[in-house]
Image (tube, rainbow, N blue to C red; front, side, top):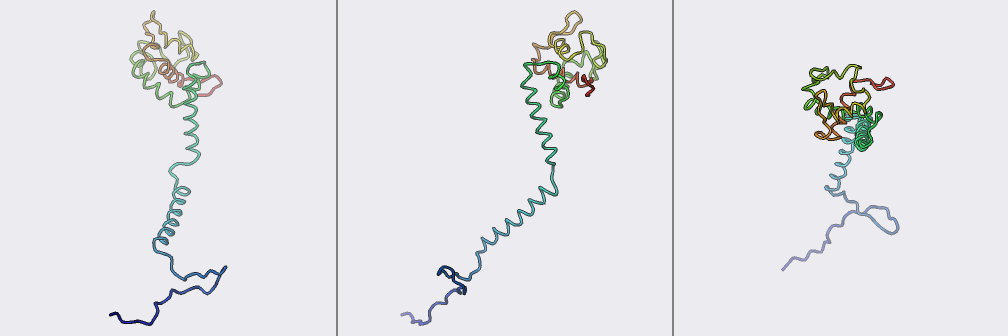
Length: 181
């Protein structure tokens, strides 16, 4: 048989105030809740320090990178209507110039030299152009070639996108009308 204890179990302390007839226990919050709360505070302080005081890149640099990507996409989609203004814009865009340089070094540098100073083919840096120096004229020369002088037409081999990138690379080494380099 069990001994009969007449003492009731100890009650949890209750706060002295009553609100709408409700009394609250005066207990400590659970440890898991406190850990989550304090962890959120520490995380927010670290996040604030990392993003505001030690940024890896500024908002302005991210904005310029995004704007350059948008401009590149717009110019790439307008490659069907290549005019002088579009080709000059492409020649000022690093994405097109870099892609054009790679294609130029693979196909054109053997005749025109990697520095564009000429060799078997003419110099592409001077102001004297045999078949016209406007970007659309250079595009036509690269696309169709000049078989009489030994230059093959690169349009069917490379495609219009790569040809326009090569022209952008060549024109990047020249001043655009209006003095913008």
